[in-house]
Image (spheres, rainbow, N blue to C red):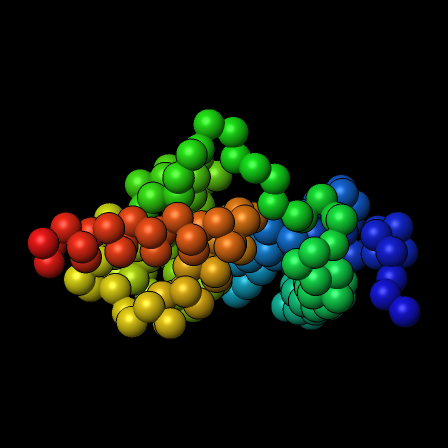
Length: 178
């Protein structure tokens, strides 16, 4: 049986989130807190004297456990759930182009390096998508997977992003080939 958001309240709290948070918010909070409490985290350096290594390790374990439980919860809900993580239409966007994807990423305050790290898509590949450098993109089958990951990470309708982007790619190919 899949737990409810209410039964996961403590895990949301560990990540300093409300229980209505989306999976994208969970991922961002996890990355932020993990970086904050890691040994090399610059933000904790001035506070390091206030935390023993054991206490810092305990906090990191709580963060990891909270993320594991919440990730399992969101994955169990699946792409067609009725949770708040289901992508809502983005107002004012008629077509998802590379520039549109870039603008949405920037508007959400997501750095390219962070997105590359979390999605395991190279920063160069993300830039090629955003800049519509079609000749530098992988074969279509792989590109579909990359676009799905990109869209899902931003909380967008992946099927629409893929369809719009591949339509633009095809139009570009047709115009080049005459």
